[in-house]
Length: 116
Length: 109
Image (cartoon, rainbow over all chains, first blue to last red; front, top):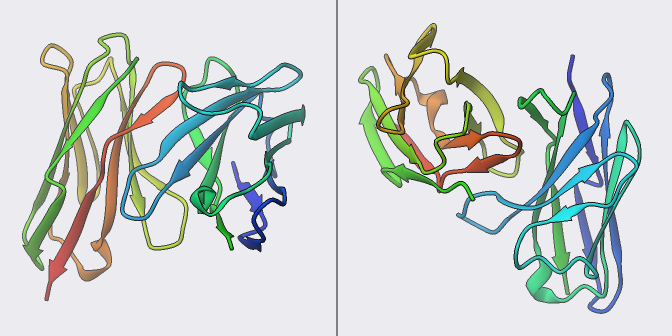
């Protein structure tokens, strides 16, 4: 149990376009989901915390108007990279918690975004 | 906010030997300390975790120790095997998981 699935696994888009990444908890309800970004040979950097039914909380330095997060249901959160540029190319990873009091998180397999 | 430091950044050990990775954290309120293994192009995989009310935890060849006073925690892998080669991340959490910088572990045959 506790499977988190991301879609797509990889995507290539042109500069200036927007890309949506989905994160689904397949066998549990996730009250909280997190979005991370990982550049090559670097660690996972937390971008934002997404709570079902409320606005996402963004980490310092992350542009909320560029990285739109929607957590419309207990099993789905989406990250939309708007007006993507080559510097947005990265590995985006989501994770999900079963409950606000449960710190353990389950990670998706990641989405490789390449902006050309 | 929480800051997690991890050492070493790279580690090469002979197959069968032990590997140790060490981390420190800054927020004394953190109460959950997971360790992840990440293979190329994949998301992190939880390999073991420990909570603040426990000092040590072991699962077969993997063990983790936690010193809350010093805000240190360590991962120990014994009898290393080629398939242990990967990048390992420590993390600390209260409500959100903050990652260390990672250790690239290589097992020499």
